[in-house]
Image (tube, rainbow, N blue to C red):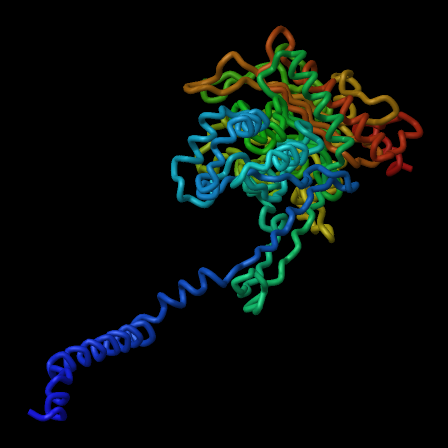
Length: 581
């Protein structure tokens, strides 16, 4: 064999099947990559987009601080103050073994007032979680202390907290918010949307280093608005102080005071006792949150007798000079007895109000048609809301039925058989004192006054208002206010229970001042006073006097130049003398 042939036979030979195997493997790899690429980009591209957005898209929220609530003079009743919230990132804590910093965790627990074991348990319960609240809305001083602890995974976030400078004095009017600044009670709830505003948001894309590279969208924030109330905090403080003192002195269950402007319907004060501290509601009984001036209803008793007298004057069955014979001091209506404590004989309408004669009031009520009497009670605003728009306001109970016995009409005329709120009673006396024009009451300042509805004649309304001055001067000395002519009416009613009436009382007084030019109405209700004093003239009238005195001085209402009054009878005599002349 030659040398050339020997070299050719020694060269390696490549097996064909190996070549094809390698070629097939390469082809399969490329086919798999192609299929995967097609699947990701054509069949299901959203997953990668979502993953990319999770890493690059961010939204920055721009929160709006809640608006303030102020009184008619601009004094703050509810404001938002800056605070911070403590939160934890369990993943960061576990990754950095931060739980080993036992002294730091103990210090954190101490400043938050929590048990350190419970605090750490909340963190390690789900170690892959990225957000856990530890404490909401702490003070800046506490936040600075926690920041100095430098515990990995413990962070602070700026928030705001609602604060009520007036405390329990205006609690039932203003209400309060929850931990998320959502209005829960009072004005905070009614005007929650206005006070909250609308937060803004900016959506942008960032790169791997956290730099903003593209702003995708931006929503402009709408600033929250402040709410201005009709309340005068100075009058509110006087009303609450006097009411709280009376409730405690007479050991009453509760009480309410309403002060309103007669000509505008603006509520100048609305106080309830017992109250609560809206800045610290821990362990506060639920019933203390109730705004009794608009939610609780009472039979108003003799405070309704001016309405009955006015109804008789409106119908024409009586005049201011009419004399009603109440002898022998009692009568039977359908087998039921109506009586006065004594036989008062012949009484003028003014005398009926002064002596609070059930007999006289009954005869006035029965002198007009049933429908006319009932219509006047409805016209006065009973069984209707007062217009405050406050949450929980009751419309009271005034039956609108066809069949009324004479005895039921008689009891209605002196304040039984219906139930109303202190706010409704205030609106009626405001209507009476402003000449018979009924207006909606308001708790929030309006840009323009609302026209009222005339429900009583001006002449008869003024006549009854003047009679109320005689009631105070001759019968309710404790309601008088030095330097001012005051008119009003007491009321004392039994509390209704299942099947009849119990042994508890409600003492009321409703009045206006000054009679020469009525400006302010004050209604006082003392619920279930204990002891020997329970009549409206004893428990409610003194509160009325002090609250009215304070309100008139705050409003700079000048004292009457001459504390001289003219009774309705004297007015009638003078008119007669003028006619004769």
